[in-house]
Amino acid sequence: MFIISLAYIKSREEVETIISLDPFYRHGAAEYEITEFTPTMTVAELTFLRE
View 1 (tube, rainbow, N blue to C red):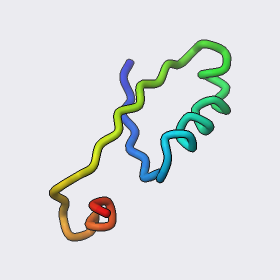
View 2 (cartoon, one colour):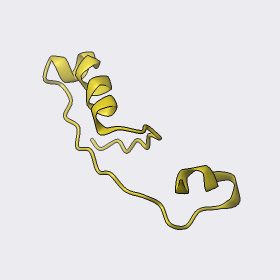
View 3 (tube, rainbow, N blue to C red):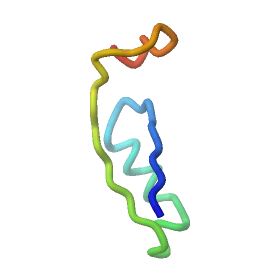
View 4 (tube, rainbow, N blue to C red):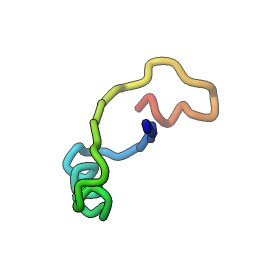
């Protein structure tokens, strides 16, 4: 099963902390792969992501 989640978080360390607190991750029932990206094109409602 694949789940894609987008997060607007300023640091990778914050994402890693959130993941480390997840009970599914802590008990080996979930794995996470973090892919950082910076959007270059967005719809008007999401322009805050381009900062």
